[in-house]
Image 1 (spheres, rainbow, N blue to C red):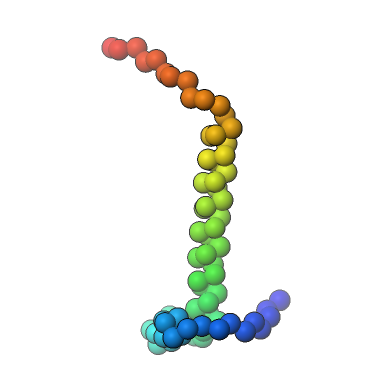
Image 2: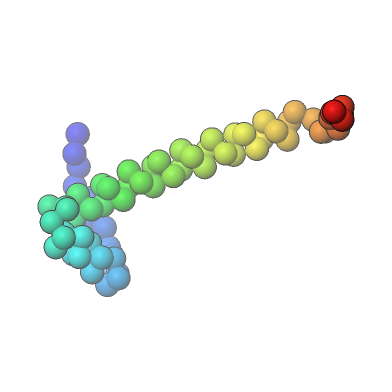
Length: 71
């Protein structure tokens, strides 16, 4: 369910949003903000995956040297 939320933006982001709307790609400031939030959500999901992999690697123990025979 959609909900109205008030957000205070500085001149930089206000101008950026207006420029995005002027390109015709977005119909409103809400469209621009939703697109930005989707990207942030994707980024945060990728960061979580990397953090989980790092923790798993740290918890797996000390690295053991691998011995590969020379051909």
